[in-house]
View (cartoon, protein in one colour):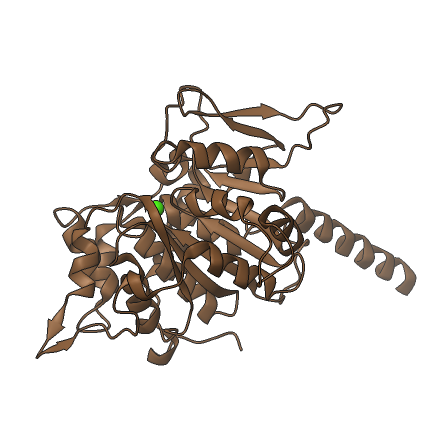
Length: 356
Ligand SMILES: [Ca+2]
């Protein structure tokens, strides 16, 4: 009898484990090392970059990721200081910041100004140590230094702007930082690239992060040596961040940099697509079922700067390492809720609990 019950119990356990495995949950232990993240952003062009940085800080506070560096693909001197101010707000002003030189979209951004130039009683509203992008290291040098300093196969790069810095990284030569050229350094140190880029629907058109620097995007899709997952335009489009969360959930402080940025980006109140937020959420929590993932294939950029996905051909010489995210109605609701909770989570110093 005891043996029978034990056998049944084991059977149920196996069944439960199978269910967990089917949901992708058993693949990860309950506690694991934080995901090591480099965040490459065109901060200043759209407000979702700012919320995505807030989400990363919340996930780090929860012990789920570690933000190693922030690199900018928007060539504006306030982009780096804005990121430094947000990092400082969340208690992590020491996170290194690298900036692009001779990059795309140098125009000023009202929301960068709203945070960087904010002054109260003669003092900066949002303290920061980086006063101008001119004082920051160049992005590719910082990418190389950051990768070289980490164990092999550990770093996840999340790019939510143009591929300018990543394309230049691939082409970077051996130097004092590393004896490896950029592509070999990426192959050795990077675990995965997660992008917000492209569009993967039957009537796809060209997408901003791709066409603003199409040669760079083409190079990354053609030459990036690690697995790559991208959140296409249609994913963030389907999941809107609610204005009510900006209006009410960030009021735990008199002044919040994400609030100040959000309300000047467009006429407030407005809901905004979560393009970049979806990429960071997937990068840190790939197995939580927030999204579906396509089969492996090869993504390329056509002559019209539109992304094209080709399923893997088993006999092909080129390995198929590219996937894109999908989302259904249930996932849209659940992912939006997760993003709201994360983007509005206070800094650790204000009482947010770390898992540790
Ligand atoms: Ca962006």
